[in-house]
Length: 398
Image (cartoon, rainbow, N blue to C red):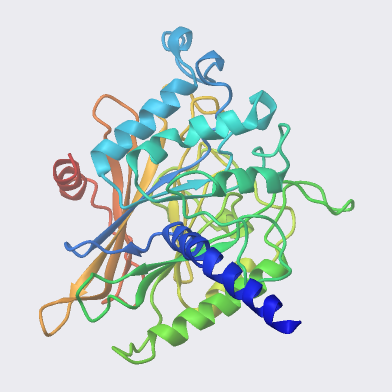
């Protein structure tokens, strides 16, 4: 009686083997592509903050000059992204929240598709986190993130698989490998952290915006430690951690530590952080690998300031259906990490991290170029070099 059953199972397994093999192959093909430094030892990131995309060409612009208003819409935001991609040719694009303006997005899925369309069509890997307006249409916060994860060429994740309990949606880490063929090709020489800074407080006694919760900070701490161990282990064991960059939407209270005397860029409005300090800055400081944090949310601020070794940076308002300042150009931030050459003359670890912004004007004018972090310096350098440096970047990327 057992033999026919065994034969049936055997025949079924032979029948299903090609299907299983095909499914495994499909799953393998759908794995996120590896981020890696190019043969020139460079990795360039374009940050797009606060697109506030609505319904496309029917959605009007805010805070533009009267002469610009009649023909201005979400399509201006799309055109700006396309121009930035062509000018900078980034290796990676990061969208730091308020990707759509939920209240004015009739069909949020359609609006998300349109907002990310330039990144998708460029075939450049990209990732996104959520702001406080993304979920204000008919999709929940989880639904928005799940839709983003389903789009092409994205490396976004709903949440890390190893974190069984974690607040928010869109907490994940991406590793950037060394140059292919070098001794660092199997090491992450630059670590990117993405977190959901929330939307609004869910505690009745606390008003205002959300914050990064203890569960997220615990995940960050564990991830940072794991990455540091791997980086400082053989082969090519390093003495210190690989630099880390952190992306989320709502600025930390520590962004209020600066004034016009100790920043690169401008501060034109107050810091709209949570009304409580969750301690995430201290958590990053204790981890020891974070060199810079990048946020959006406050559209009229575009500065970077260094606080105890960590650069806190705004991108500046990008989207045209977002509040701004008439005559003050929309802008985007670019960050470039460069590798050093080893004694053997091949690319090694990260040597420096630089940044600048480009304005959405006739020439995509680069401004505020400076060094965020340098391996050879005891602390990050804050040297203004908007002249020769910015001119060099304009010519080298066009």
